[in-house]
Image (cartoon, rainbow, N blue to C red):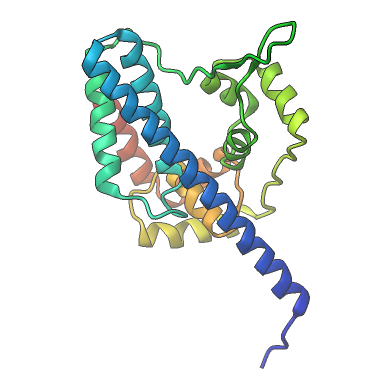
Length: 229
């Protein structure tokens, strides 16, 4: 019978506590965004303003993205996710010229100088946790990369270390997940890997899927092209 390792037990309990804290943050952030999207939808129905439509599409896109990435670690209602996707697509068809982006507001402190962007620590930690680059985060928040880097330094957020896993071991884990969740794309696969405590670069996840499920990668690519028209 294996001996009980106190250090390993304490380390695992700490990891589980951190996972719960992160999941609670994810849920809170998603709840806030869904509430904001609902308010924007009501505003759009009352005023018909393009600005309201743009904000609604932006928030729906963000919610869909985060729900898809969180599918493995959170109990995500698939029917709700499909409804959100349908809503976003419908609005997008009606407003094809709208540029989809999540524009953060500014904090007016009353002091001299340009107001600071309203970017929270939780928001940045969540993006970094899911492997977004600084450039991609800046695009989503519609701010400069310099602003994102400065805010990360201001909050003293440490970059998450990627898991040191060989390609062979990664392929084994990916294959196990694919058997349970066939036709799983790279973003969702990243979520499943994170649920197992594995932080893997997106490029490596895509390569592992091409090695272990080449037919599925081709099929999903064709489906995306068909939807995009």
